[in-house]
Length: 389
Image (cartoon, rainbow, N blue to C red):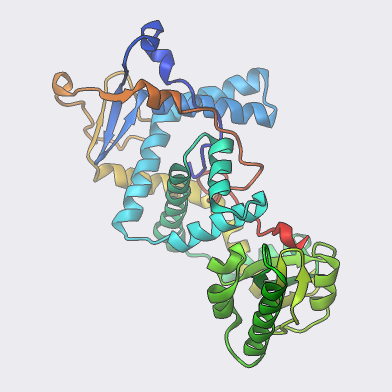
């Protein structure tokens, strides 16, 4: 359930038949009402086409594909209702994910190599068929759902520390890590500057190094002064393995202790200043560092039924109406969801032009989508910065 729509969504006109192309409006049928939100027949068609392309991408064929699609079709309405209830609960709990969304989008912008915001937005639209605002809303809803699961389900599932230790001792090979250096950056741009501008940029970079070494917080200096897209994340670059950085940068930081601030390093885009946040050595990670990871591994199998129970409770207290002929396979026992005032309910009308712009959505250059493995795919995003390679 926690995932982004990166695949084709073009089924709306199918229900309208040939007359849809000659009509001014396309009628979109509402099939369920969930508190203040709705699920339409088009939403269910979208989910089916999206699943078909995902399974095709995974290489499913024949009977395997038929079985997977049968499961998707059977639970399509349930999954849409689940999604709406989770997002509604997150808003009710006043969960804030704005900073996480900003970090994800900044990481994505770095991976795509589009420092210009307008070009980045164009790239999102090109790759997903969504406006940047809609894409950002989807990311927000995914993260909101993940936080609800962690806060309202996972946090209420106690785990014995002995179980964590036992898992660690039995799976030590999973926690052998490579050496990495974790960095923050400040970029003083020199793009488009003449000789005087270059001199001013170098002076600014030297001054920032002096201030950082003098005790000012590097993260704050980056947030306020850096010209890199990481400025909004206080210069955070994440971890880098041997050979991943530009040689000049790797030489400047690799053998330095945590807290070290480099001199300005001249790169194509300007003057780069790096700070070593941490330097992890190769070998087995200590238990205290990987305990959260192990806890999640242990809890995930237990979480599936717990999440379903939580969603059942949300259904029990929700306003739900489902149109005859459609089935919520996650329905709460005894919950009345009869469709009311069918004759008075006018179908939602959307313009033909609006339907036509719902173009194919493709996986965005392999960028992982934030989420949780508990109720759907998704991993944390990469912090790869093309300027450092």
